[in-house]
Length: 371
Image 1 (cartoon, rainbow, N blue to C red):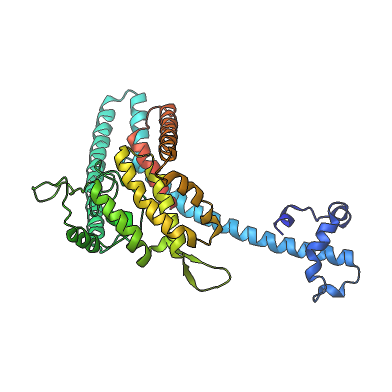
Image 2 (tube, one colour; image 1 turned 90 degrees about the horizontal axis):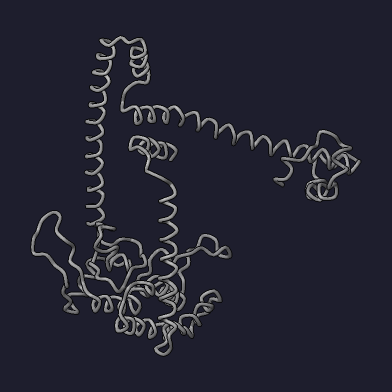
């Protein structure tokens, strides 16, 4: 019924000339209700109902516009104040105007005094910004420390299983590695650590120096295979993360979990799609595929979901020990990744030089204000 908002109902005769059948069908379900059925003429009854429906919709739209306008009136003054503070470095615009006026009238003494005032205010503003930046860093470090103390990350992400990984990486995107075993499997740090200890696994990169700034211990590819095997064979089946939960419209109020066969096949598909394009040797690919092939063959016959069954032929061809499907798919993924990176680089180059720092800060503050 949204189309009623833009329909011209100012004239009964003009309204009947265009799509009158569609308009009558739109009001047919309520035409016999009180007080509409008191109107004897069906065409007049339909016209009156259309006017009523249009008026109701327009009132709702006006209410929404009023709410948006009210929100905008609350945000714009704060944005203007933040914009003026960031771009002018804490100096009032009127003070700059006085300085320009004195400079235009060639009053050197006044210009000198105003410049000193402006520079002192700018220095105070910069000192205030440094204090706020340090406080923001401290708050971020506190949040990271809280995350580090958590028993489990609470989520699972795709990782590069061919690269060295730590147990838990709380300094993500630090140049060493993206994620750890806890983020790759969604499991508890103590559980992962206990499993590696039981398997007598030791880091391949470890610094003896203790204290802040020490490097995270990294485990090698053989350890990655052990964790991958344990995840697909045990952890994925006994402790699924929130991504496997879903709501069924036929069963309101009940949260369901993706069945184990579909869960494993979906996880294998995501792992293959994300990891195939990473750098690896043929020997590593053979060991990696062997683990995924084993678990895929175990569960593929029990998959009932049609969407999941469509990816099984791809997995069988890619993970099969024979053939070049894995190498071809890896080259395709690398070429696609390179194309995306080239597009991003070209876009960044076409944007020109970066804006001034104060302008960038003002835009960031504007985005924060808009929420």
